[in-house]
Image (cartoon, rainbow, N blue to C red; front, side, top):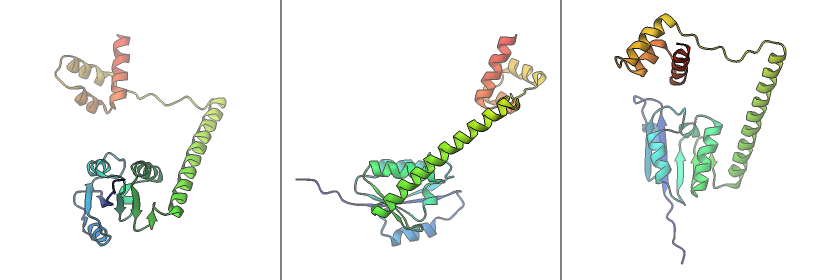
Length: 195
């Protein structure tokens, strides 16, 4: 006998800052019969949000994730499609009230397939245009690649000496020079090889 799966309505709320109020979204989700709510007070720039990740671990087959607007869940189409794909793999449906999206309906499934296709087409077309532009610039002698980041040697050397003696950390030295970690270690290697 097949075990009956109990459907659970799960809400997800996101606001960008700690100061923003979540009450409006909470009221909407409660009106939709949501039983459990996960709330993030963080930017939507990526999916590395504590409560979103907790929710993704919590959801089970048969559940429905409900949001007030899909912009609360994802910042762009690519992110939305990736998250909806995670839901689909777990047997979870997705509902966005504002945009009237419900992945349980055939029309919305079809719409999301079109979104995915359009996104992939645009991404490939953009990369193709970029490659063509670089090729034309190379032929015209105008493309030299990225300009290397210049570091003032007079500032670099004393900081390097302090860092090697353990007086300052690599992070402090990087901040002083305004370098990312990758660029910092590349500059250190170049400097050490040139001595």
